[in-house]
Amino acid sequence: MRAPSTIAAFAAAAAAVAIACSGCVQVQMPDEVKATAVPKGTVLDLTWSGAEKLPETVEPVLENTLEDAGWDLKDERIGERSYKDSNGSCVATIHSGPKPSDVATDGDDKKATDRYLAKLYGAPEATVNQIGKNATYVYGNEKADIRSLQGAADDGAKWVTSARVFSTSGYAFFTDLTCAAGGNFDVAFADLVTHVSVKTD
Image (cartoon, rainbow, N blue to C red):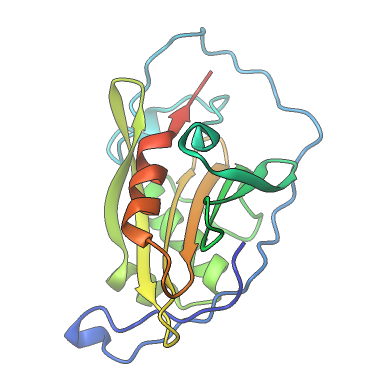
C-alpha cells in the first residue's frame, strides 16, 4: 500500500476534509485458496443489485496484465502485487483476499465496500459515503461494480483507490494507484483500468 497522503476536498459539504492513509493494510490471507462450487465459466452478477444472490463460495479476485503495458513487478506477497511504471513515478498495488474481520457486512456490498475503504484510510465511514464514487471494473463481457476514492496531495502527488467487498463470501479486493508529482497519472490510470479485470473462476 502507498505511503501516507491526503485526500483533497471533494465537494462543498466536504471541503477541507482530509483523510490520512494508514500506509499499511492489515489483511490476513490464507495459505490456500478455497475451492468454489460454481461451475467454471459461470457468468455472475457482480453489480450492487446482484450482490445478495452471489453464492457464498464465490471469491472474486483481480487479475492483471500490467507487465504487458511496460510495468515492472516491484513487490509480491500472498494476495497482493505492486508494480511501478517505466519511469518509476507511479506505483500500482493490486490486492485480493478475505476482507478484514472487523469490516461488517449486512448483505449490502456497497455499504460494506465503503467500510472497507474507511478502514484502509482510517477515515470515518460517513466521509467515504460522501466522497466515494461509483465505478466499474471489467468482468469478462460484463462489469463489476466498485467504489473509488481519488485525490491529490499538497506535494502534487495524485492517487486513486478502488475497492469491492462481497458480503456473501467475505472476499474483497482493492487497487491503489499513486503517482508522484510529475508522474503521468492519466496514462497510468488508463493502464490500470485497461489491464486489470475481475475473475471469478
